[in-house]
Length: 376
Image (cartoon, rainbow, N blue to C red; front, side, top):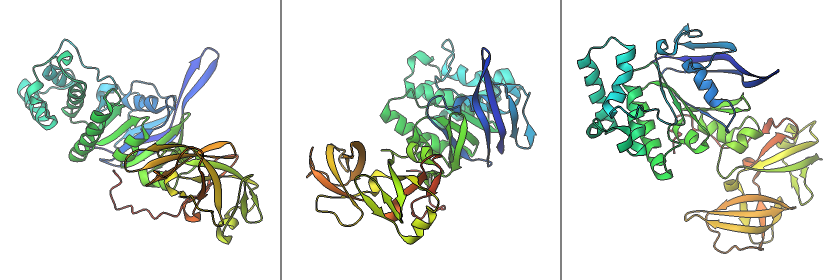
């Protein structure tokens, strides 16, 4: 186990006469045994960052420290890391056992008996002890994923690196393996960076999550911090499903003014908007109060477009001034296309963002219990 620090990492690629900045001064550190999920849209620099830590990409600027030692210029085999790839990268001509032991044979001086003992113990931990003599082509996707994880575990590394290891599994198996993988990491207590584009995986698996966009680190925090206290509009929109609703509004005399409504703010919130002329009102679908009755003050009139029943919840898509927004309610059975409804945005649940920069001005007032588990 070890601490891991990324010190202002930069990675640029040359594209003819131009340079493309894939990772732009990423700076963060992981505690010993921490599970950090690196999340963001495709092309944001997640895998490139992981590959720099692994030594598979050269670092343009910055430093990487495992423990207290820089590994810049160190060969991948000498970094005491183990990596699990998206496509598992199993050797097709080898059995599961041979795949799991191959790295130990190539990079260590361990004797055959010790290697076999490690492989057997890891296989029992992963529940694949009966599959050790099978080649990858005879294994299911989930079984291949376990073999790939087992190959990493037998290395007993200081750091695990995982590059979207569940993305090739079907939805049901992905959910099951997500739980197993988090439990396994807790048991092994190994510092881990896990890369994904799936914000649900990030929210349910990570001790902390780091959100990247266009190579720039947007926020690092616990899942609940990033959900309830997003640093900017990008984080607010990326974390959470369905996504947060964003409504542009002008700031006038202590109120938010939209073409369809005026939202009167408390004196405290209005003071936070001093000097702003335009803001973005953000509110999560589950925080909107919906009613078919005539609305009180701070209620917006909207028209229902579509109702999606999910069993325990309903997603209701409504239109305000030609723009569609999402409301999540427990009972939407009495709603239908074309129904007029009133929407109320409780002030303690709203977010406000700078219309130009997207920086958060105000977040909702939900209390976050940092001692409680964040995994759902």
